[in-house]
Image 1 (spheres, rainbow, N blue to C red):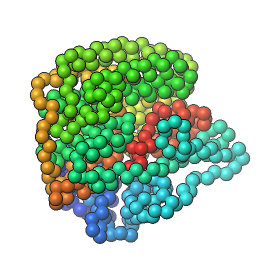
Image 2 (cartoon, helix red, strand yellow; image 1 turned 120 degrees about the horizontal axis):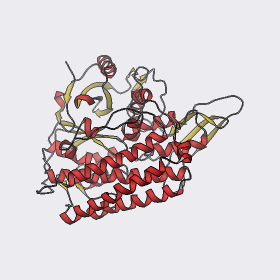
Image 3 (tube, one colour; image 1 turned 60 degrees about the horizontal axis):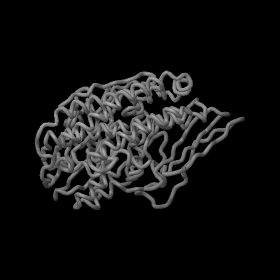
Image 4 (cartoon, helix red, strand yellow; image 1 turned 135 degrees about the vertical axis):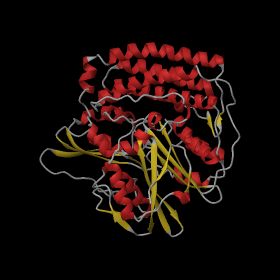
Length: 495
């Protein structure tokens, strides 16, 4: 029996997904990983007295996804995959946390989220890594932070000013987003608002991933015009966040001009999104079956005018930023994650591309408007703060090009098509390239055609470990800068 082979947004009947004894599944997982396949999802679903484990791998070069499953009884255990394939480490910890099925031999089996959700409602003390020796000390940051930042704890083990190890404890809120999808499965409008709130800075990214999953399960073909409007809004979201990050990175190295200039550019871009749908963050724009707001010819001209201005401004601002000796002294060779490490831990998105990994869902597993206009993968190799900052500049220019291409090809047509019922007994994988990286939603329907499992992966789930590794052997004063160069999400992790 071989693994089921599908594509992004291609639904599959549950009875066509092969189920292996875990020993066999483990063997095949490691074999496929060794041949270059990449782990996308590894999660459980409880059905009556058993737990079904689903494993999903990607062959990015061939735009294929592979899926298989295995069954466990409550209290079972299995031989951990992590010692031989480190990209599994957090997925296995989460699977244990939610279902109590222990990965024997896992080297770092600690809670993914504070406490052990699903096993015990009592908080379990988190045992941090300890160092001893002269001039060795710990620095604790959080979980309470200033302003609107969500809770997260950072525990630094330092030798003098140098960071030896960083351990990150997240998941203080127990948001329960995935469970809310099931509790409100008969309320489509609520589910869409919930998808928009998975990570508040990725409204278009997550909402678009959700609606495409629903459309696949119900057989809705969205019009070309609606697909293109979605693509434009996603690229506007990407530009807006990247500009905000360049502003913040400038501020972190005391380059106040860049902080102000990039911040002003960001405002203009998110106001452009507001001109489309009334929300600077794109709330209310995406709908199952299409979009709720059209782009008229006058609005298209306005968008084009704004990005033309941005294209000129970003060239000048980044030329100054990336030629400044004081900026480069802080950016270059700071917070390095090598290509080998990035691949080993399963890094995704902009951070992966900054370390030389050519991964981009828009190109590898195209969807929506990206199926009509190819996106070329762009990478850098140094894996430092400079590369992650410069990739933002590169991707802003790329997004401008995408928006221009698609504005010229809007065409005519309806923007919203009727909603249909979901097909029963199906599974679909919906992948998208959010501004942080790979977003992966998996939806499973029961025999009644209602959702019985909704699994979400924000790119932050893949990338928090990279931050912990990036700060090693750097001064503790460089942590804010390295942290901002990733700009990961607390709430996108705490699902």
